[in-house]
Image (cartoon, rainbow, N blue to C red):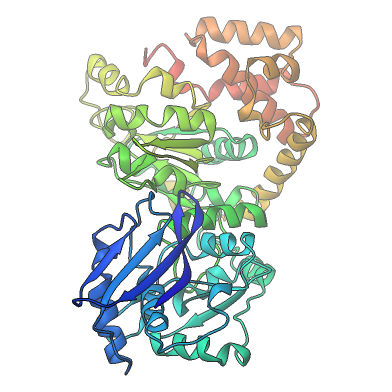
Length: 513
């Protein structure tokens, strides 16, 4: 007595089908599960046994073998509970269905037979469609994310009994679960915060606008309470709205990580991730025996905010260097290698010195120049090479806090950002992999960031008088190109360069790093 049911497993941000084969034979009643199952998969027999009995079916007292193919890939998680239970009932003759092989089945079973949600429903639905399956049978909580995939039927189930009834014939009567993807996408695109909430800090807001317009990574330097975190949290609100493809790609990552709320089928606003400075390198970039996405991948198409930057372990900051360059991260293990997308904007914040009061008129700094240099020197040069804008965030004055004048709202700023991004899209339309000014290398900088003699003289004087480092040169040109785009200027003028020079605080000789 043999049965075969299709399930699925995730691998990175993709999925592959798993063939759940069940064989009942004569002999002493024993249960064998093969196909490299982990402990959670092996323990499924106890959940399956109780669920079958509590659903008023008979658990066969036979020698039983369940094979999860392909057998050379390690299986993990509890999503095989439902297909294993259905396979046992089919092999024992308690369930007969002509459509079992047309569906992919996933779901964790509770002891009473009810279904619990699993990870990766979206990518599993995508794989089921690509393999020509008719539909996916899954827990009700996973239905919304799976229904984002067009061209495949999604059937949400509440229990094992309901799943059995579905395959026994109710599949002819039930209508597949459906959501209007475009409606969900448009309705969910709103933020609870706004740049108008921020009092004062007009120059810093301008720097954030420039960063958003050119896709530049940015570092905020200022005393505690100056509004660095508040400003960073509002950066996603001025970035261009996510496209549907970006939303789907981001949702895939959150789905396999198990971080997608059951009421939300789509991540339609740009993610904002803010890990604590005690985070490990594996948690930041991803890892595990079977690799899972880390914070940099969860921030894909959004913002990664690192507060108190010098407090992060140096090893943690160093592992970010390659993902910042390549927009993806590769996690390698002895028998496998997994790629996760990691195209994010990096926003960092730090105090100007260990005590935090350097440059604060309301408090006296107690740090020596050596302590300040040592503190700032915790940030490596190669990481700073990937941060185009450094801006100082001064303490907010009382009259600005007490002012009732509303600042510019996020939507107004966003429109200018969208226009600048549109200019860049037109400029780089023939360049593969080049989407914003921040992506330009030295070759593109020479082509697209040409300056006149007045601009060259200004830049030369600034480099000399302000003690700017050599690494600042290309960054200033890239940022000035973005400022020109925001101003609707085809050419880079001296005023654009002048503003860009202001955004290189850490390159000045005062910090000497």
